[in-house]
Image (cartoon, rainbow, N blue to C red; front, side, top):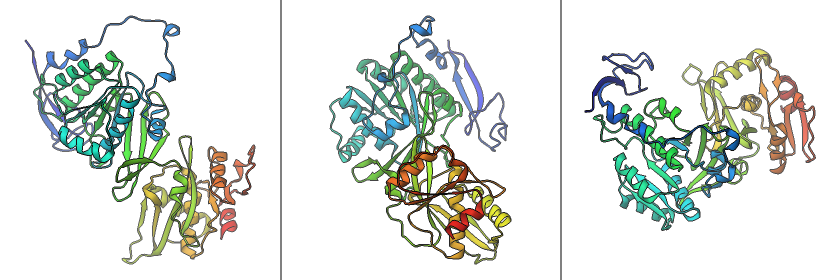
Length: 452
């Protein structure tokens, strides 16, 4: 007979306790504990589901990159590291309506045409609703099977019967194990359901993609252990009012976590953005004070982006620093460096900084461009539109070297930029055949003198 195990579980982080607590000692949130009853025998039945194996010498194990399953979507494959690895579990999170189901349906269609049977399990939409979405996306593959089911035991039975190449679960929060008395979406159900899917993926050697909800803070909902159980964690990002979406890896056991995929939301679905640099700067207005072009590296891809700054008198008497697409605290630091090292005092002004296109950049290589844009707006002097600005700024006002400088400069030259302001320390060993004027600077004085 199954033995009941009662515990109180934090619905925010998954911390468990044998008694109710008002405040979670892990995430420090109040009133998040709920009682959950777990049948131990049922909760652990998945432990016996994995086929028995024996230790093998690593030199006798065969594996190759050619075993990956390509989605047919180049940007998606780039983020995954070259496609889905058989037996892997991928968790995809993102805000509601950002396009998770759309891109997975498109990938399912491509995978089913290339390899064969793909099973798409929808726990939130009926098969009719999924069909309506598929019609809008132009999906007509006969090898793509759609199932509306939340019971994990029944889902596993269908997987065994169909033996698909890929399984997609939309979403993990709706799946449940009948042996657990907890409600679907609870910490226990999400954790145990994910563990069951991991066993299915490993034992049957098929990739399983789990769709996860996110909290209002932008983190994946459910216990933190969920991210440790899966092989890859992807986030689908973007502003609802913008047409561009970014697929970013935050964990990848089979590839880099620095790559991003960029998509454009169109009426017929998500389309790959082959040349994002050209797209992001195509609407830039020339001879506008406060507008500069900066270069960032995302994985192996250089991106040219328009960075805008606006400096205006503080209307309400209290200066504000507002940022979109960049770290607001980094902006405050750069303003302090500008004041201390150059003597430009804008402490009585509002400062607004924006990366156009809805992109979010955390790389320090845009520091120099940010300072130039702020100074340009403050002095109302436009920057040469054919100049790209690259460099990290230290607290002493020095311009520090950045990584992959050749890729950044090649991308700028390819898009018609004829001048680059970059760290002088990056000049050593630089071999560039393209016709672009290189102006190396060592500190803020040199950069501001060259441009303003």
